[in-house]
Amino acid sequence: MLLGLLGGKGVKFLRLPKVSGYLLVGIVIGPSVLALLTRETVSGIILINDIALGLIMFNIGAVFEINHFRQVGAKIAWLTVAQSLGCFLVTTVGLLAVGMDLFTASLLGTIGIATAPAAVLLVIREYDARGQFTDTLLSVVAASNVICILAFELVFSLGHIGSGLGVVGGVVRPFYEFFGSLLVGGVVGYVISRWEEHIDDQAELLMIIVASIMLVAGIAHTLRLQPLLATLFMGAVTNNLSPMHRLVYVEMKQVEQPLYIAFFVLAGASLHLELLPSLGAVGLVYLVGRVVGKTIGIWGISKIKGYAKSTRDYLGPGMIVQAGVAIGLIDTVNRISPDIGKVITPVILATVLIYETVGPPVIRYVLFRAGEARVESVD
Image (cartoon, helix red, strand yellow):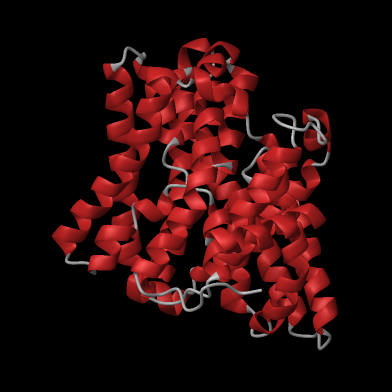
């Protein structure tokens, strides 16, 4: 945390987001450079990642406020579908063109839909970005991860029908994960919303929220659901039902900051520099095709629907960063299909290194270009 904090301060002189400093510190002290943190150490303290990601998804869930979403829900849906289809089609077709088989190419196409919410949220906070473009970016990021997980589970399950899973199992699994996560997150969110009505102490309210995030993540892991979706749904339910919820945001930020710093330092330490030389044609196609597909999809639907120029020009590049969800999905592949995992794991891990390094400065750039970054930096 201390080194990450120093790294975040240091990159200000380069006009980079603090997130970039946290990641760079992680790379330097991680196994790829100084090895002050080994891969065993990083994997051994994964609880920090679970809590930090839970807090991030809980906060992003707040963008799904019912009154606001009634006004912009159709727009978010169109943008999410367009960028998801664009990413899947461009990436999959590109991988087929370089000789990859249809099933593996389709898996990578679905994984490409995911966008890392953590980096997006922290860069937005650092530059105090507010406005229509920022709300749209956060909403599409959240929705794209839901689409990614559902599409991946569907493609992966259907691809294993011949191995004994069966058609019913192949189709049911994605819906089990989605609706199971919705149920767990929704029920816990409802309970704490009612509980919060009887609490006056903000410190106690904060403890309830953090503990509930850990509870939801734990239940989701146990039931083989998606912890990210469950905590996202919990945040959406709590934000819509609890009149007390907004009062705790300032205190939550004080608790979140050290966890987020540790999360990104660990993320940097987990990046695999040694895989960059082996990126190859497949990696390059995935690296470029994913971003091109998202950008084309958003640009096309924005032209058709007449969305704002900032959305048309900057939303696609703003969704470049990728990390946790993609890595979590390749863990699923490695557990069930090691042969396919050997093909896609180096691609994802090598491209995540590039996305995580380049992504935060790009997000900063699009926020300023959209005219919604209000300050140069917040200490």
